[in-house]
Length: 308
Image 1 (cartoon, one colour):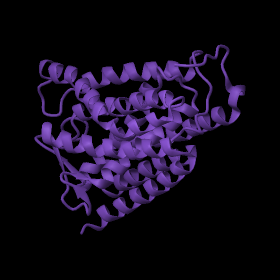
Image 2 (cartoon, one colour; image 1 turned 135 degrees about the vertical axis):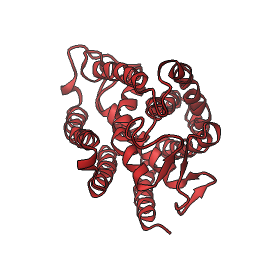
Image 3 (cartoon, one colour; image 1 turned 180 degrees about the horizontal axis):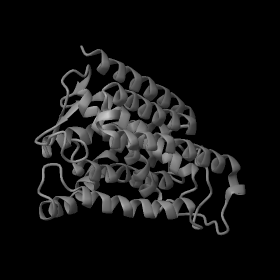
């Protein structure tokens, strides 16, 4: 038994149990959304390893369902639930929300994935540590841009539909299947264009960068533009806003501390700088989300609209 793996598993489980308890206190749907997010995380990890065979998890995880460690599914649920809560607190309209969810999620992965492989949590096949993004293939980051939106777009739609028909809430448990289908379809453009533009193992960073720029541009408009809805969403959120940020902070701190401990701060200064910058960005983001959600209508822009 690997002590590091066990500590990570227990930590993620504790966060998830707390999140599940708080979600259940708010109602049936928040709890079902959290559970389905965990199922989605396990499904995509299991299916990706079978279909694409580009990575594999360490066998030292204590609890796994076939190829997918349970802790990964729980972590996916916390990440997805957290970014959805933050997006709602920022007053982002539903039509833009999945894109903002995506940017908030990828800001975590850019900081920890390259560290995680050096910790031995998982291994990317056929790619060296000097290739891709410090050993992580560009296709992984491109996929991250669509993992959260695939789940959140369906979950937000069902959340709206179930307001007048509460029994529809149970359909949340089957959301992981169509969400994975959306994720799979979103990978088709990258799969086609990558061999044409970058044949290097782990290549495709330009394609990812272009997609990320587009997502960030839409997110900037959604968060700071005039076309915003009312900031809040606390009543129907999966996670409490404080827990959403606490989870993100824990992820950043654990992997940044490990990065320093492994000596990567000096050997890979760019990776270190990115990790620190993304951690520091959490502060202004938390302040903005807290002020908007706490201020209610006082933070409404000149033109506030209601609906999608």
